[in-house]
Amino acid sequence: MNLSNIPSKEIMPGYHGKLVHSENMSIAFWEVEKDAEVPEHSHMNEQIMHVIEGTFEFTLDGVTDVYIPGDLVIIAPNVPHSGKALTPCKLMDVFSPTREEYKI
Image 1 (cartoon, rainbow, N blue to C red):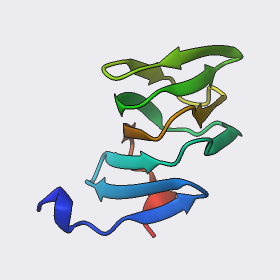
Image 2: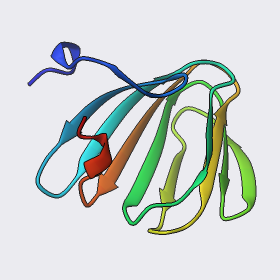
Image 3: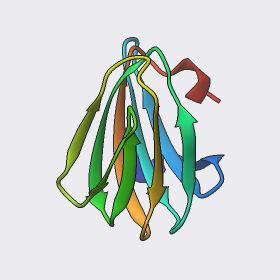
């Protein structure tokens, strides 16, 4: 498969994702509009977030920081987190196990 052939889906307002799923993991390639927010939430999946482009404010378990290209954040299962794009962003999220609710 080629990423350019995968249709983008707006999973939440301002978050346009190309989603790839295997038996045990999911990868989301996001294009995020400036000021788009992900409200605080948690899930049973382990997650790694990678900032590819832009500036992203991210709160993990009550601690807020600003992340830039090259930064990675490891998010343990069931830990509350939220985020906001301070600029237009490109992010990549990897989830394990597969993020079933993103199989839409």
